[in-house]
Structure formats: structure tokens, C-alpha cells
Image (cartoon, rainbow, N blue to C red):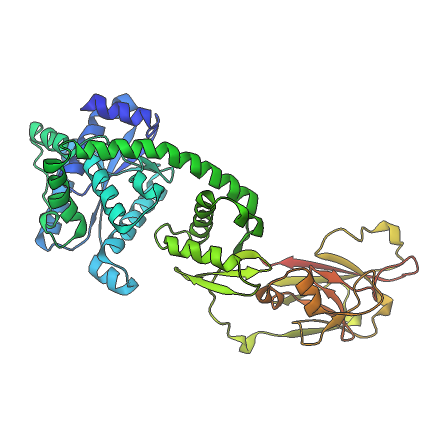
Length: 468
């Protein structure tokens, strides 16, 4: 048994010398088996172990007896342990999720909390070969792709490991009996009100008795074979992601060229984009991927809503992934700030998410400044400004004489030409001199106020985005 698990750990690179492994210990047979095996192997693996138990408060006195059992077994073995109690039913009601999802969320939040505070770097869970077979069948019946049939991964998210995924339930039960460990038994595992229990208690035994007595290992072997194909497709999709997806703080962009790629890798790339943006692996289904593909075929401006407060928008063929925002209370938000020309030198104003700094340079020679220094640093002929400098939101009918042109152009047309989304247009500050647009900040500045060899006094404007 120890040799088999040790080989599995090494073959899958689950544990390295020096790792601090936190064992998810429910008190049931599987987790008690895992605890004892890692305890026996910790010297050879050169690791430190501890246990974590979350009391879900779902089974009355049994929940407290589970907690007591975990406490006692850890004390007897001389290992550190962490206990937490959470009323999963109350959590489920508050966040409007199933008890299963609530339990999983709270459990892993608890584990992550311990990792951060105590310096552990791996979480070991007690999934076994029977769990793998049950998961594969469960996903097939719900409808899944190749990744779903691969089942439970031995190593996930660079921290979650399944060291006894190679062991069948019968092997675990024999080990428990031979060591006289007397684990806790969760009676709900034998109730057929849960679909997964029906697979465990009815479907797998029927398949074993009537079709294949080695069905559990057969499904596990299939999982290992498909894992290699899945990893190849994952690599291709990651290459596509790096090529066509751009990450910003508030949104992601999926470039239109990606939709020419083969659907097998396109689907995976889109899933990776929305799960990475939303930081959730469990809210999205295949129908949401098809929704994005369909959106890419529509005209600019069309929007589709996804779960987890996410939506996608077609902006000139590119797909923007964004998060829904609450409507701003605009009562106390200034839409325009005015500054007298005489007060411009060494003055800074705050407008929305920006700091805008003004300074005046006297007796200046044109070639001593870099006019193309940055999109957020611009220079203007200060002598052409008569009185008022203002920073404001855009207004209907706004026009500018773009640098290098003679005639004026509407700001709306500039935004359309530069493929700036409607949402983003309302966040861009407009710098005006005497009510004439001098600079669409970060986008385009005006010909009317450009610096020339004859300019004597120069206004330097530096824009900085606030950091949060």
C-alpha cells in the first residue's frame, strides 16, 4: 500500500521535499487512510503534515462527534490540527447556493486561510479511484466534454493534491481494518436521495456485476489515457489565449481573429478567459461558450449576460469581458472643474479617477521637450489660452480640430474610428481651453493649441490614474 501510494506521488510530482501538507480530515475512512499513509511516509518524503477539519453542523450530534474524533486522533499522532465550525445551511440560504456548493466554498476558504497564516503550500484531499469512477459517470450523464471525462485531477491549482487517487475503496477499507482505525461513518453516504450516492450504491455495482467486474479501474485507466489528449489541447488553447486575449484591470479583450480557429481549442480558450476573469471555475457551461461565439457574429454594441455578474460585449468584432457595475450615485460627482489661467502654474486638480497636474514653462525652445513623450503627458501653447481651463465629461456635439488636420471632427466619430467602447467613452476626461476641446485625454489632442517654434509660454499637462 505504502509503495503504491509513494510511486503515485512521485509519478505525478505531487509532493516535493520541504513541502508543508495540510490534510483535509473529515474523520471518514478515506481521509483517515490518507492521514495515516502520509504520516508513515512523511520522513521518506521529507515533509511536514497537519490536519484541518470543518464542522458543517449538518448532522446534529454526529457533527460534534466527528470533530471530537479528529481532535483525538491528531493528538494521539502528535500532529497539528485546525478546527472550524460553520452552519452550512445558514450559509447556503444567505448566498443562495446549494448545500454542496456552500460546503465546498467554505471548506476551501478555510484551507486557504490556514495556508496563508501557517505557511502550508499543499492541500491533500482523500479522493480515491472509486470517487474518480463515480465522477466520470456523473459527468457523462449530465453531459460533458473531454475535460469532464478526465475526471478528478491528481494535482490542481498548484496546491491541491490527491495522493490516494490510485487506491480503490476496497483497498482503503482493508487498510483501515488492518490498522484497527475505527473511522467515523457518515450515514448520509447511504441515502439514495443524492444522485452521486445512487451511482455509488446502484449503478457501479450493477455495471460490475453485469458488464465488467473491473469497471472502477477501467474508468480510471480511461481517465489516464484521455488526460494526455486533454493536456495537449490545453496547451494549444493556452497558446491561443496568450496570442489573442489581452488582460486589463477592469476587463479582458478577446481579439476577433481567434474566432477563425478550430472550435475544439477555441471553446477551451474562451472558457479559460471567462473563468480567469471571474475567478470561478464552476459557474459556466457550454451554452455560455456558444453564446460568446454567437455574439462575435453580431454587430458591434451587442451584449450577452453570463453568470457571476459577468457580461460580454461585441465592440467592433472584439469581445470584451466585463463585470456588471452598480449605478453610480452621481449627486456628488463633479462633471466639470474650472481653473483660471492665472492659477494654472504648479496646480493639480482631481477629476474622477485621475490627478491632472498643470505647470507653465517660460522662454521655452521647442526642441528641448519631447512632444511625443507619453499619451498622458501633453504640451500646449499657453499664450493661446485666454482665460478658463476646464476638465469635464464629454458633451453631445463636442468637436476638436485633431492635430495635423485643418477641419474639426466630432468626438463621437473619433471614438468610433478608434473603436473605443461606449462605456469607456464616458470615463475619458476632456481638457478644454475657453470652452474649446484641447485634448481628449489619452486619445487625441488639438491642432489649435500645438507648440511651435514661435511658442513662448508652454503649458505642460500630466495625467495620472489613481491607484486603489
